[in-house]
Length: 107
Length: 119
Image (tube, rainbow over all chains, first blue to last red; front, side, top):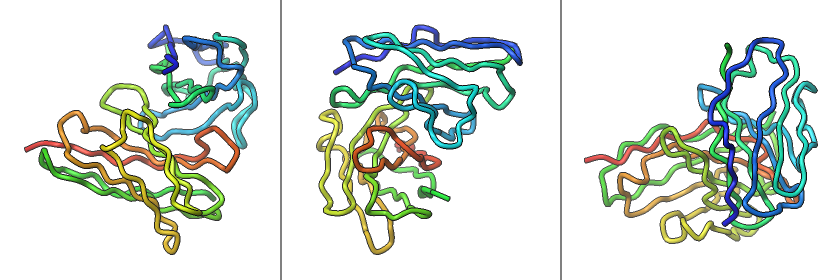
């Protein structure tokens, strides 16, 4: 299975900050990488698919980038509703696998 | 508005089985695969498998073969997941999520069903 690693398990930032969350795959995944947001109440939403495509209704302050094995999610101008845990997920090879998550908190 | 409404929390004894549901609304049920995901307490997400509501074809993560069985009822736009031979390791929150054919992302998610396996 492809292992997805989010080395930062938690991150503290201030409102208005620019935040970058990283994700690394155990092998190249050809940009087949999605990002999800899980709120403290458990609600999960798709943010970004295929590395950098914004899902419908997702604010433009979210963006994604990367290639090969290394990918990142950037939130510009952090807002209170962005407090959540963020997961990456690869779909290069079955089984689809997720990263361990990065919990974003307000400083 | 796309909604996936999952059934309520379950408390089940070890060795038993449980069947949970995911009722879809706001879209054409047969246009999207239904996916299931496990989240053990405080941990990450694991893909369990997919089902094609059109023909019932299923695709499982090898890890969950024999543990999970996915089915659908097209008449009620509802997907089901049965878990058998339950142990404490199966205690988790289980999510359903849909994915349009040809897309490889988990598009919309249900609110999750909490399963507790305890005697």
